[in-house]
Image 1 (tube, rainbow, N blue to C red):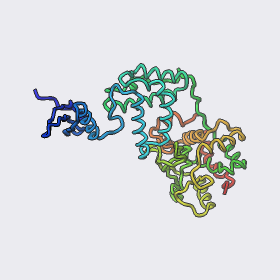
Image 2 (spheres, rainbow, N blue to C red; image 1 turned 90 degrees about the vertical axis):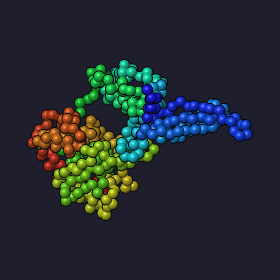
Image 3 (cartoon, helix red, strand yellow; image 1 turned 180 degrees about the vertical axis):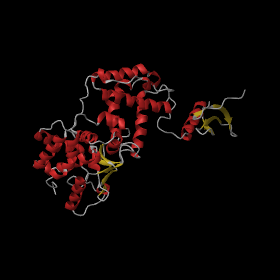
Image 4 (cartoon, helix red, strand yellow; image 1 turned 180 degrees about the horizontal axis):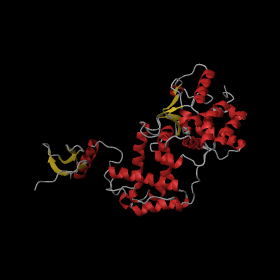
Length: 401
């Protein structure tokens, strides 16, 4: 029976033999073979003054031959923290290339540091089992929330999947955990509430009467939320090039995020379904045309709602400095920008649109997400449809221009 071939991506034993030169000087020649992932072999030979020198020289040369990537050196005895570092390095590189959001890199990095590595960082990959991962997730469930427990499971699973793909382990134990349920969570999620049609009109009227809100350009911005159902970052990332007055639509092509070390930046939408064209009510088309005319000549690549320097608004600053104080003054402390998004889904539901149609507007991949989270119940169907028609007629003008 012939010798079995080396597994792809591995090297064989290093053989060493004595070599005597013509001058009588003695040295040692080491020889090893490396088999690449494509099955090809590389014969590596190096010389040293001693046997160990020759072997080490061959090992170093083989390392130079290997086309390395993060995780290539991982084995079953590697520490989880090392695998996590390799995974995060690769994930960050993909984010820099536009595959993932840079804000996700910051989120995963923080979660690893604060919740995962303190529990699993010192364990070797071969030591991590389903009960260990499950115990960690259950602990986060009991001391925090379902959301944090699910996030913990996702981060651990991503690292272990990376380890499987690197050949360090054969299976991902995190995938064997039973679904996490909120029943055992310390903090229960509050049921999201949508504004009624009457509350929408009252909120907009108070925005129009509030001088501080007008200076912060909130009346028009909130109306854009209600007309489109966009996420906060999407609305702040809308550019004039996205607005089609003739087609009466707004194209969602990117969103504003906060990336550590880079500040406020605009990146592509979070998914393929996020990049979508949203039909606009006539009153919103008129609102945007009025804004554009009031601003004079505009750069099509500039934001529709800019900061004082013409750049993108910082979402946290907008919320903390302007939106939260206004909510308190107006008696709508519970209303977030996400509440407006849920309100749009509810109003469109009561107006008779299907879950698929509403999902297309909101940018959801699956109508089930829309059904479960964005359709409030108990709204007055006719009043909801009327509310969308009345919003534009309550506008007093363009604030801040």
